[in-house]
Image (cartoon, rainbow, N blue to C red; front, side):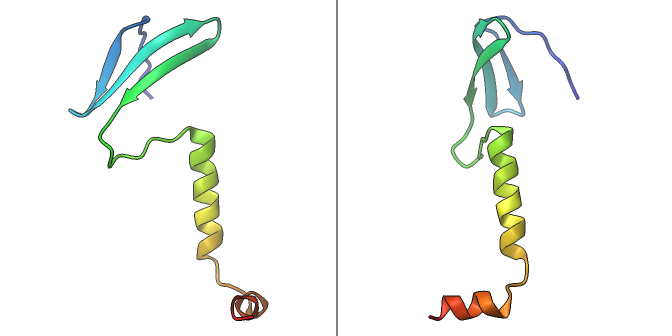
Length: 72
């Protein structure tokens, strides 16, 4: 993991097309802005984990009962 120090108003670049800017710092909370192309998804980690778990569940083989419910 790369750890960087930034002050309010300072940015960092990822690749050539993603800019992360520190917008505000209040106590232990940091507000950041992310400027990235629309085709690059940006999620909070807890949301990303939920999406991954839902995708894993969707990939499991459905039970015969679940299939019956689809066609009822």
